[in-house]
Image (cartoon, rainbow, N blue to C red; front, top):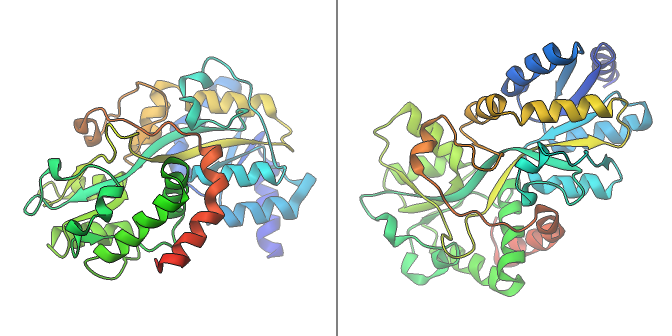
Length: 325
């Protein structure tokens, strides 16, 4: 442990701007290069295994941390960082305002850099797109034996169901989860890619996944017999999540952090960041330059992630109550 801490401190001490992240730093390489050319300052992204590792590091380092920012792959965690007293707000510039308000913290403590949808994939041999409508419709008995889902032990599903509680209410969300459990084609899957593969093999007709897993598989194999459909269109919009940057309260270089975020929100870097992971750009109206642009426009649920996050513990309790493992 001491060796790791020493290495991080040594690396960070050489930089003017330090970012802790659970994303691959290569995803932000073009933005780092542009930032360093514009400012003459050095930025270092320190990769950690997950959100917990980042929080543990920050709480251990306290005021001694070299970190100015974090970049985290799940929006639901930023409320926790805020509640722990670790964040301060970015300045609300015209650049930050290009990101929709529901993809930013209420006081701009965090701002999304890319966006993803958690939505339907289906086998067109069994279904057509018009058969699919809403998340709650998949709880109807007509889907019995046709549904494949990922384990509940995933931040993606914690986030999705937290959003359901805000959108549908607690009791209806519980009813949806109970219906999903009754409609499973087989036991829950460990990840999204295995769901997509099962659908391709005809083991189930429909599943719920992050869109980029499907995009990556479709990019590698255009003949993959699976299609995508956006949930809740005309019914509040598909639930989205994303990767975002946040400004730490202990930041020594607030102005540089602000500049780095604004560089990442430029059109060039938005396209590079989103393309690296088949994500959608966070900036409103900016179209991706990968195969996902062919999917067209879709309605997104506009409820605030700062509000969703308040339901995280309720979501985890519901999973236990309905036996969603």
